[in-house]
Length: 155
Image 1: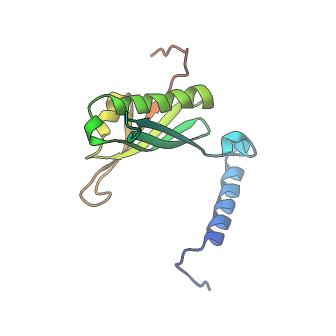
Image 2 (image 1 turned 90 degrees about the horizontal axis):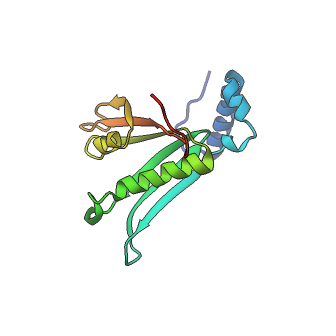
């Protein structure tokens, strides 16, 4: 017999996360090899663009984990859209991820009314499409293989 509860409990959440991490580590040699290394932790990566007044013109918030850059947010203020600022922010994040953090790939999620075509123009490939998430909107997951600086990619 079990008692089922539905409440926010940070202590239980942390215990669950630790137990899941232990289970995953036991099942995966890759995750086991990461235990106790710097690659095990998510490391924030933020890139900001300020206009001539020092106001926020755009920014990118993400993190790196293992050899992946995960872009969580990329936003450019309306007057600066179409100027290449979004491309510059993304390129800088990718540059930092490859040169300072040895990342070899990137991932992100975006909605159909946001920027899936923009990301495809930046070399990202759609790997997942979720219709009606939320209802009436389609969510896309995109990934990109990153080339470390100074390395020439061959097909």
